[in-house]
Structures are given as structure tokens and as C-alpha cells.
Image (tube, rainbow, N blue to C red; front, side, top):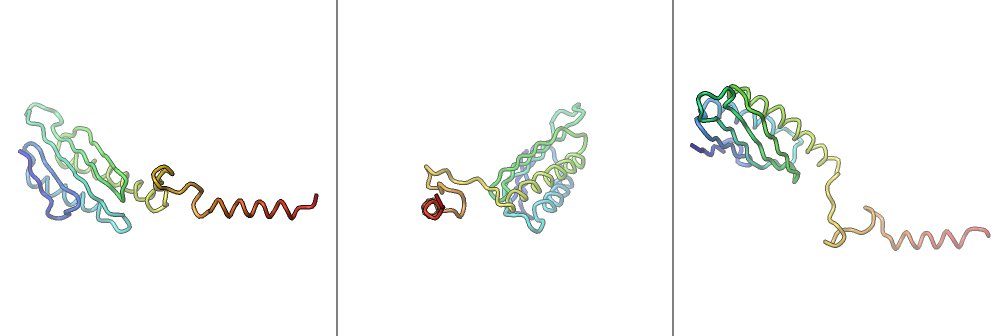
Length: 146
């Protein structure tokens, strides 16, 4: 059974596979919302999946994955198998918070990837015009004593 529950945060979908109860989904939704709706984070979109194995004899039937985009940077979190739904959600929350913090820090610091010159990006360093630098170098050479 696959369900799509995205009532609280339409930008992050919560999906489930297997016999995932509503209590676990509600718990997961509150934990995910706590991570992605923090002030200072750029726009967050993506999907979180919670899976419960069908095999009743499995020792750790719960697993979770998240594939989010935080301000244009992809954040992928895969949680190993856990024994209960609450454990897998708690571990997912910890890893999501750590990864979204890292992605948000990079986003705020401005360390974004730049467009290469052959795709229309700048050829010089940011804020420096190469023609002005050449003119300044020529002026300095002429004013030096020989």
C-alpha cells in the first residue's frame, strides 16, 4: 500500500510503503515539519519515504529515505533499518537536521556553483573586470622610475 500524505507541508511530500500506521505518519510529519520549517532555511522541496517490510519475521522492518532540495542543493538521507517506526523517524530527523543545516550554511555563505564561461557565466573573478585590470597595470608600468 502506498499513500501520499502532504497536508501540512505541501513542499515536502510524505509517502509510505507497507503497513505504516497513521500514528507513525503523524509523528513523522511533525518531526519533518520541525526540520524544514525552521526560520532562516531557504525553500525546501522534496520527498520523504517511510517503509515497513511485509515480512513479519524481519528484525528491523522499518526504513526511511529523504530526497530534498534545500535552496537548490540536493540533500539525500538514507536511514538504515530500525525496529520501530518512532526510532526510524527520530534517526531520520537527526540526519535531516544535520544535512539541511549544512546545505543552508553553504547557501547563506554564497558558495553556490557558478555557471561556466561556455554557458554564459563570468570569465573573471566576481566584481573584477579584466579590461579595467589591464588598464591599471599599464598605468602602473608607465609611472615607475626606470
